[in-house]
Image (cartoon, rainbow, N blue to C red; front, side, top):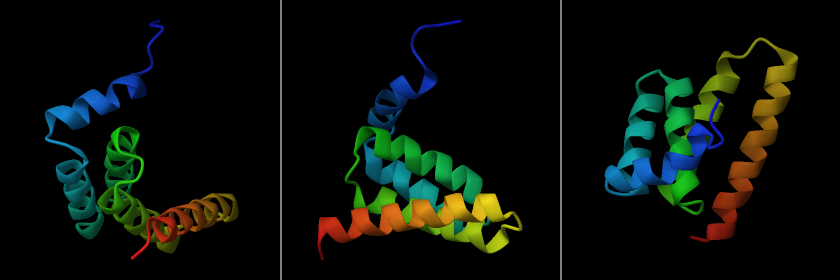
Length: 96
């Protein structure tokens, strides 16, 4: 119905939350607390605002690994493995 997709305002939401750091911290807490889907969504919101946020990438990785551990679908597992490879490469590119 609207031209602007919901994802277009993710950077605004992150700014309201005080930056990617607090959003990534909440994503990590969700991943640690057993809600990897919620964690993945929040990590993606943080990364929309700050694509090189190490904390958001780490939260995304934790969520993806938890989802993979619970996956019983070969197609889903393939997608999750590909996403894990991507995030791992992005983290490595950030350096130590």
